[in-house]
Length: 247
Image (cartoon, rainbow, N blue to C red; front, side, top):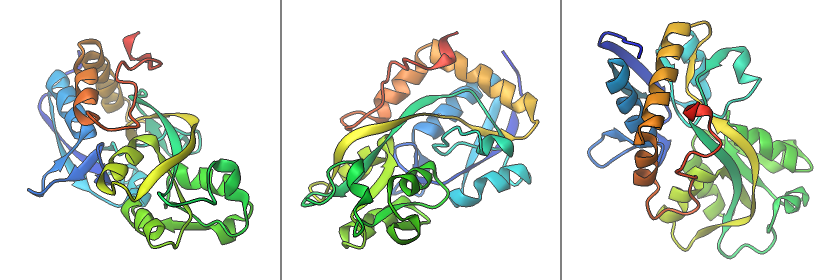
């Protein structure tokens, strides 16, 4: 097992993504990603401190050494892989459409091509990229927001017809806005989440890959998944099926 010899690490994260990461009433950053990093650090001897940052600027911040790495529900993509290195996939992800509970115009992704439909998403996310592909005119039909709660507020204010969002993030927002919003249509996409490391930082990436495999294989990963998605629907497969971590 790699040993980082007690190294202190700055972890950049957009802490508006419960249950991955959020700020609780005590002003503490908590969530699945936080617990996962802490458990990995127990294996590889490090100490991670989470720092709140805007999602849209995190890749640059990791590249210029503002943070040692980032974990923030990052979808692994070839485009992002040109500027940063991704660790092993730690979660399988899909996307969904969120609409108001009384919505009748948007029932599935095909409805997003209707000219009067406005779609909200978070700036810099794969959700925004997906939304632009699903609508007929991205220049007129897409509204981007710095944070997902702002996109949800636009939905509730009838400034948007739907929100494209990761399935996991949708779960907590539905709970927070009970009775006001819902998932419509089927889940779509087949993506994986990974930690973001500076390009060429092989030692740190390798250490976290090793630590991630260890917490997966000893059952800790599944326990954290069950903890953070307890009584939340839709939820991930807490067996971790489809991840390469058991190899």
